Figure 1 (cartoon, protein in one colour):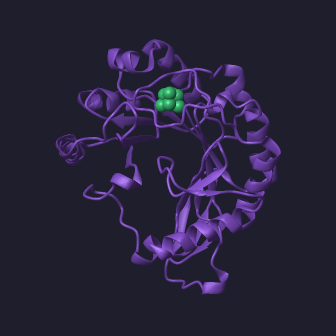
Figure 2: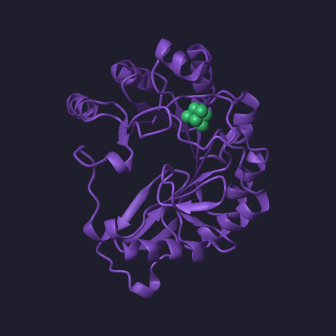
Length: 299
Ligand code: SF4
């Protein structure tokens, strides 16, 4: 099993089964701590063929360089990262996507998830990636007409793509919560349960050029919904909105160490995908993590 040595203890992880074991009774000496965070999300490209108004991905054509990306992935793997998540833009518009998944699977011990709108997935592609991608995150944000208005794509076509994934891999549904989608929550969760999703991930709206952040009233409505809902599948929420929701709490020491980082499509390392500030990665990613950490300590 892959190990991460953190301030919260030693974390063992199996990428095939998804089993996590945290030995929090172990105090890891400072000079043995893993230098990389547990999870890193990577925007492979900003390219996308859809135009969702809630999207915060920059509207330019930046994409990460394939050979450089492989070096960074190896470095993260060697320094304790447990898993990486590819996103975008739309990651299936990244020209080396299949080759990259193959690399993660055969040359690293990293778990791999991909966040996608799903419309490029075919039986052939999904079976080619079977066993290489450990988890798919399908972006849905509303069902039926709501979905179609936001995404400009048929909900039936989306459902067909979900069925392809469900026959081949573990997957979850990502759901951006805003005033357009909040009333679809009950039906969307029932849909996720009926198609065999493993997780329903709530993503409260963050501010974008076209949308305001989720309002306090809507956030309260969401909390009420979560508190009264009896889900058959795992319910999750983005960490930046977790406060006030009934989530598993982390130990105090764990909160002081970075658990997640993000690399955007221009090669900038950030605390979260929607942050505007970060550190441009030169050649060595661990060096960039150190710079980002030292900036945080100065705040
Ligand atoms: S599919 Fe994703 S990346 Fe593309 S526009 Fe919509 S939110 Fe943005």
